[in-house]
Length: 509
Image (cartoon, rainbow, N blue to C red):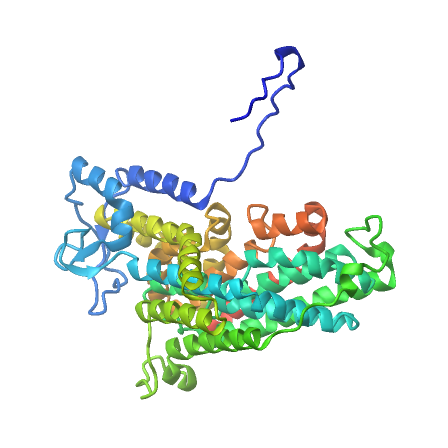
């Protein structure tokens, strides 16, 4: 306990007004849960007829009584997080509850998957192999500016598209900023290379478990559905983004006065940090990187519906080598992979155990967001308002072409991505409504997932509510307003390209 005495009242400083901070995803979803519960008293209950696959049949919506008393509704609110985790949907009544008999409606599989991949990623970072590998790449390319920018951005983009690499980039500013300054660039070049490199990868998440994985689960499709469209989109958008940053960097290098960030004292001098040697990768580090690459490659192989992807026929008979894995198998894969990486890195039993536990603990927050969001859909399901909301949106998009429908899905999700800062929570909340709409529009649900994740990723490139953006510009000592001036032309270009991709994807599915 401190022994200092409080200052006298006359010398104390007046309290400063607290600045507004955007609430966390958990708080937002708690508010959404209560709001939806209250709205369920006002929104009429109704339902569609269902086909054999359980999908709603267009044109069959009709009003039905909810059959719930006030006590029933109160119980649903109270148990919403529990139902969001392991609620069971009764086959006869379609009601969800923890004591029912039927199919799992909760997100227990996704919940465990998030914890498992969190443990794996944490173990990989604990070995230091990934950090050292990226640092070594940047150092070896330090004399070739354009290649350095492209190399760093492509690596970040690959990590973003396969595992949602975003917040992890904050640790690289201390290395990348001095390198860029030593090559005659400015701090904005470093910001663009880091934020936009990882950001465009997340925007085009091919198999990112925290975006595509959660959204695919909520849309009731495979993680591999739509991967061809997302891969082509990732290649094109990554190339455009890399070219944009390199163009800006060369302009600044030729004429420093055109820098949008300006230069701080000492920036124009060669940084000692840029010339410092980076430790080489040891054999253990190389082995860890190889194992990590093989694990993600195997994950992609295990979830892709190869027959459908190679023939273009969604109903093609699966090849014999297809695994068709989903979240239970993937959760087991990453738990085993976490142990394997620890053994390869010779971390020792206690270090492996504690790191896995720490990794799972670090990812409890996004896992909780998923079950809270699923709990909201349980409230809507039990009060029978989900189909009513779906019917209302059906009237808005009815008659539109498949391409226009896909663009509408993208645009509608932009404000939702701002209001719900968690990609996992946003996906779990929106997909039960958006996915059936795709059935009505004759569009693959995978296109809806792609449009949703593009909206979430596009917003996260610039919104001030993300730690990646605000933390990044702060670490690079660049004004947020100047970053917006730098990035808005690219945002406009990406917006147009995304609309084109989702429209074409809808037209050819």
